Image 1 (cartoon, rainbow, N blue to C red):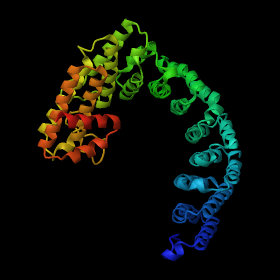
Image 2: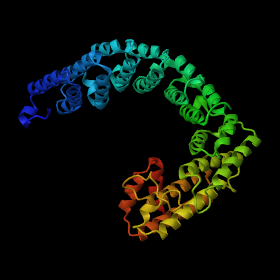
Image 3: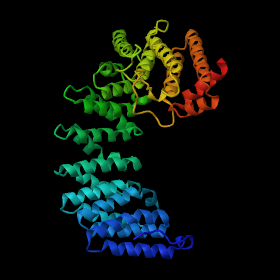
Image 4: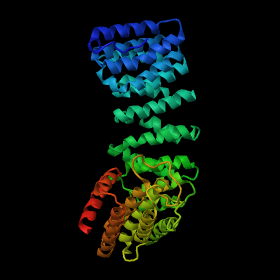
Length: 452
């Protein structure tokens, strides 16, 4: 049965819409499971066509009644409808009544039914997140011995925190306890650790979390996946009152040469939050971190940059430049040397590549295509502009007139190479606007204009 109105006049009729809703409800009560699933799948289409608050509220309440009385096979599909129709949830006027229907299932004796109820609440976190009844019910699920129920509780917690960060105070002790428990699977611990990133706005919780992240990242018994999650959460909570300390930066720098790319990236991203200039740092500590970052930069310095990607190079060069400023080693900057070599190689690749083959280029300059290339942006332009961005960032940090002069020359040569290819200024502007650093992109535009 189609829910599409026969013509534009009836499509505007709420009477016709409610008739369709009643027909769907009737099909949902059918003894044939296939018809029930088909009818449940029609609800999102009906709501998209008739987003009336009264219809939306009625439809979701009917789905809540079905969820309470249906077998688990249908509950799964009903939970999916809540996820597919999230844009309509805000129009529900009887949210508390709907939640009561779901909580009946959540307090049942069937663990699978409780898992599905948690999934539904997670899909509808937009409207359920601030209800104490929902928060308390989720907190109780952490006491379950069923592994699927624990996983569902973690995922629902993460969804709820997106709409109600205050919920973290309710589950704080429970989440920390589970995240510290070595008997909990790493996949679940990772989700728990990452959910703690919501503590960032909370001064007290973020301060407490610092030591936990330090433990998870530095503990020799931690697995690499736990270390990655810990460093990502650690990075999220770094603020003025909670800055990364030099002793911790030294330990984290030990991972910048690790064989696991995800661990290298997490370590470099965390070090990117470190501000050595404002701290009293032992010279030997700075030298050790500086040496590790220099070794990291030397890996991609050759023409075939296949070991470390551009993102890692950018982070390593940025942190190294800050250390060089703190140590007063600006005149012999390894970060500038790496950025300059990268830009020179990028310009060479750009100049030697025809438009027809440019799509085969990637940021690693190895001649291999990249699956992560953004659609609509030719990789050869990304290669060139990203290298110019890196040079501008490093010269800004080092604050040297000599480096700024060379930077202007690099930008000018890059611009001339683009115009030589017959590309217009509009093409460059469009491409630059698609990149992820808007402030730096504006700097590129200014430098391009002033250096011509």
